[in-house]
Image 1: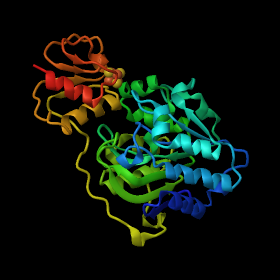
Image 2: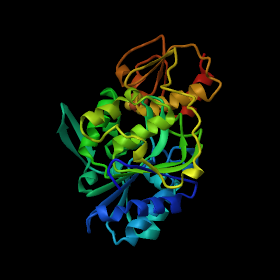
Image 3: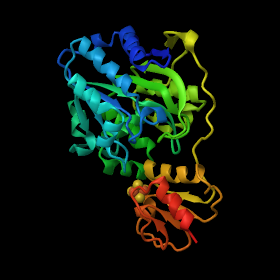
Length: 358
Ligand code: SF4
């Protein structure tokens, strides 16, 4: 396969279609013998893939099967769930422990790993040590919308490869810039996008959509650009994609000839997204972590709390601020006279708090 090809296979058979796409790309020839191969799914939360947030384990099982069939044995599955969730629970709930056991591959919770800090651009960014030992990285994100960055796919999936403290800090740095620079520190060699079930609106799932496809590409910038097109998002509106291109992580430029559909007759068109960046007139958001903001969005959009009029503040910029005329969300707002405990609080915590408010 050329590096600038995007290969798509339609259908819901995650195992066989992943195996076919890997065979058609002849990926095995790209990997040197004895390489340590990392497989990085998206297990942002402990939910089964059918709910739209996490990578279908059958895709990862097919990747492992394909690699072992081609005599690649040094394989590790690595992930660190988002702030507030437990990767080990996600491995179990999402079916990854069973894969690791039956195929005899390593599985690592990156939340338990030490980190190494590297200077890049004018930033110091910490990445998990284990990522420095990987020779060939297969990035296996889910095609999803995101309430802060519009979309998330391959480039942002690497946020699971940094310590939790860094995940929080990225939001104080505006999220886009550190995500782009992170992709200069950790190189993705191949992206396999889970487009079986995704969620066009929410990173944490809950409104799953059967999109019936798997997408492969060697260029993380290009595949994210293609996914933007599928979702009806202008690439220029997702700053970490254009910045990654400027940093030579990959290219946003492709044309129809670059898109190879292995079975185009089974194609399904995607519906339009309902949400763009989600904002509320009464919410003041400054540097909030994704998990925290997602809980608030969930509480305000999926409950009967839509019509709350009180001012609500959320984010790390509110640390140590004494505020009496607003509701604070999360531990960062613990100097407010009224705030929801937790770091992050769950959507249920926020809904219950708002139920009891007044
Ligand atoms: S309270 Fe929310 S915004 Fe503050 S650090 Fe915790 S998760 Fe992040």
